[in-house]
Length: 226
Image: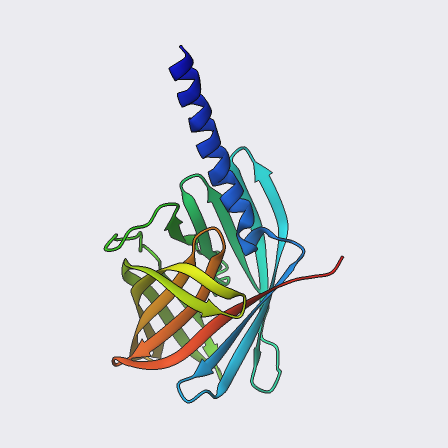
């Protein structure tokens, strides 16, 4: 009987620990500013993104938030604000792609990137993200399709970040993008390397084109003073 009670207690502690890990992700800290900076291979500044978690809610063992962000180009010009939904429970973290409204007024179904609570080298991850955006450029119809595939855990790696050293899991995947304007298709294939710190979040991303590093994005998380 005593052994059963101890086992049950350990299980409860395990569940509690996973819930606590969710709360430690910067995606759920409302008193936080998250800034990403993207630079090209030669170190030239490309853009920055400023984000803030809002509407943080806890329901059962799941925590969720609305992640609001705005990108600024090298001249400081702001783009359209973007909204993503973030969810986390005992199984892992899910980050959505927020697709804009299509020309026909239909809102595409949300799709999520999944980061399991436990990762190991060689693990194949969910990669079912595929969507299209229709719009116009200078009066001409344009269609852009995005597809993520072959998403896989490379293995553990410790990296230096603006927040200090982080124990990360390195993830790689292929990103296929195709632009179609007036019937002409323009494909672009990228290989993405991503460093994910369990219990914290993505801290660094690299994009490779034709096997060469194209750009690097790093994350800075700042606690705001109350």
